[in-house]
Image (tube, rainbow, N blue to C red):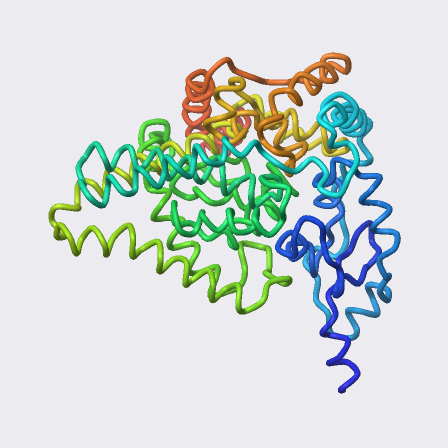
Length: 448
């Protein structure tokens, strides 16, 4: 029994069916990145996260291999999705070609094609602009709460979530992994969402199995209020979701708070268990939530009173939520993207990612969204620093054109948002297939 307990103290990652012992590994991107892969099949995360895959493969080859998966399971180890049934990035000729071009045409001229830090690192002034804006707006809000200061703070908190925490928690914000981890925790303190929950939800569930109606947590997060997947049951109120849906986006903050607390207590996000996370990290997540509530609620209320804060709080939370939700939600939920998803051709990982996603805007949009306007590029290479996303987009478009792969993009967010509303309208009504089934059923009743 003592021998089994000792072995259960080891940490294993499964890549291409082979368990690797990473207990003593010092991951270059930080332990918080490695934690996401512990206790699960992590091939897709491994291949998409490392733009210089050859170097990652070399490091992987020197890791100690564990016993077979079957032997580990007999010892008592549990794994999420121990066997991968999705196509992986390296099996895609399209992905491999784009990846190599990025290294040669973008990273090499920057001096990042070799070396210990890889592609990581956004210009310091990008980060300083966001954090400085948030601190200034937070100070203004606490000292002089109003509808205006609340609205501006909402935008600033949204910007922290988009352009600091997002890239940081993907491991691409700074060359220093520990600093990137700390900057990622600004999500907990500023906008108020748990970076720990976010990393598992976003990177393990959403990015790994993007647009999968079963495995992608984002496909389920709005249902039953909003129907965004063809597998979900159509209900009468969905007829009006194109009208009330955008209003629901303003509730994102409250949804995140409720979800965070439950998921931290369960150490689980949807189908993803926090197998690589220590109890101390969960305690830290709760402590940082306390800090968030103190500066946003307790401090200004103690100075000005609760009644004086109601409108400023509402402005900051509703406006910040709306813009944050809009930025994330419009790029995957479009009629063309869902048509590609329903065809369910996942034999080419990169092609599937591209055709079920959309991008909008250019460098200005990228600066204010942390590269999230270019969702196609972000989903192909999630750990790249966001300031090079526009350069990556040029390469992706060229390679898609050569292969007749559908690349859907918009000049601005407005065009993307309008098509999203059309999508909500269409998915709130029966499809042609649903209408045929209903007509056949009705005919059968009449004949009886």
